[in-house]
Image 1 (cartoon, rainbow, N blue to C red):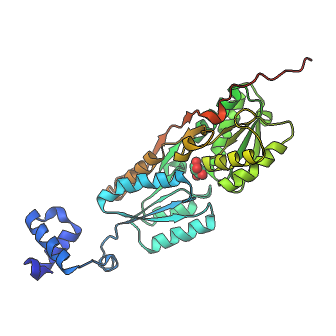
Image 2 (cartoon, rainbow, N blue to C red; image 1 turned 60 degrees about the vertical axis):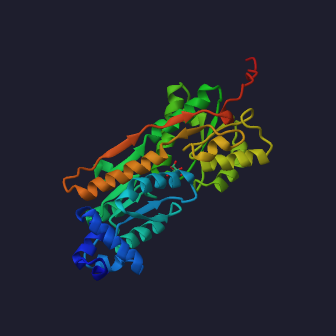
Image 3 (tube, protein in one colour; image 1 turned 135 degrees about the horizontal axis):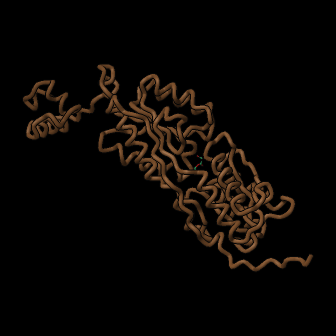
Amino acid sequence: MAELAAVSIGTVSNVLNNPSIVASATRDRVLAAIESTGFVRSTAAHQLRGGRNRSIGVVILDVSNPFFTEMVRGAEHALRDDGFVLVLCSTDESVTRERHYLGLLEEHRVEGILVTPAERDLTHVSALASRGIPTVLLDRAAPGRSLCSVTVDDVRGGELAAAHLLADGRERVAFVNGPPSIRQCADRRRGARRAARRLGLDPDRAIVEISVPALTDEHGELAARRVLERAGGVDAVMCANDLLALGMLRGLDGLGVSVPDAMAVVGYDDVAFAAMLSPALTSVRQPKFELGVAGAELLLEESRDPRHVHREVRFEPELVVRASSTAAKVPKIRRSR
Ligand code: RIB
């Protein structure tokens, strides 16, 4: 290869690993020689010689959830110009699987990790960073700025969803939520209860909590019957994410419940399909792509600057009102006392 391009082996190495220091004419000659010989370098061999493997681990809760795939798309957009490849791991909200994947990524010596943790305890994630692997939390805050993180104010998001329903005259809101071990679920619950209190309502009565084991459309559909069976009646449903809301709409339809007239429905994330549903889904929009870009940029900054100081990049949620929650409500006939 070097002979073919009439350069030294060191110049070929520079073209592959540090092209900006090679004159463009020389670089073009080496690249032409590489193409003509069909040479493909071995990252493993390069790594054994102390080189970098240009890979970034991305650990998310559910690869079938468009919230995460859009966030990963943002990270990929921010990293590809630097020659990085992403190694994507989906934990299905399993702590065991998360720890397994983090161990594999460390063995593969990835140059950094972006992770949405499946549990509150961040000990094993922080340990990675302490062993020299830059690690950034996606959609989760780090206690005491121990790591960089990109987050959305989920307490505010939960408040926006519940206030929209309660202020619209709905009297009891079922909140279909995931396990409190997922911080986003706990924060959205806090926000929903804060909305009830700020409207002068008893949160224990205004917010009827229905817990599901995972934030999937299947669990949303199964929860529909549980919503209808709650004593005292419920006239609105707030779901912890849009997959749950998708399943809820399917379940209510199957039970002959009209949305929004008999039951308003609100989701969370505002993923692409939310606007395409019938009725179109009201949701709390999270800046998914921007979250991924910001997380990747923090990771690049940390890997390049030894004086880097960990910080949180925080975004605000936004309520997007659509047909699933805006019936022209028929005033309830209030029984005379
Ligand atoms: O990370 C937990 C949830 O937060 C995910 O299901 C995703 O939808 C986000 O909203």
